[in-house]
Image (tube, rainbow, N blue to C red):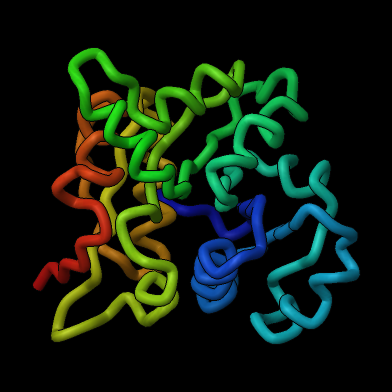
Length: 203
């Protein structure tokens, strides 16, 4: 599934992670709406520094596109998701980094991965976990490294949503590797999973 030129992405969260993703979207001339918990005017300097395809927005504007990235501290996730009573088939990219204590419980038999919990909190959404296995400062770097492409893992339970996210990852110049379902792949992607914070390059 190719990435269409007229598509855009919403980003909830303008910290280091949200800005890293916005940088790559801007580099590839993909329109992006980014918001924080304050007024959009507080992000004017940030978006000017990133590029012209990135726009500071309200929460309502940022959740309007088909693909919305959640890039906020884990403690803020429930409150943010509750602001949308029905996500109406939108694709949520879960780029969060839950606390290790939360992830440790998820690693137990029968424990839910963080993205599975997000799916329960976001009725109507198709959740894909991605962009969360690299530290923000590494993610912000060029996807080409050491003669290859930096790897971004993704997992999810909806085939079409996963294809869209894989196409976006590839459009940004990264190597997209499918880890399967949220239950299986999600545990690998989040701490203490084997792939958490692992910087790999595919030659």
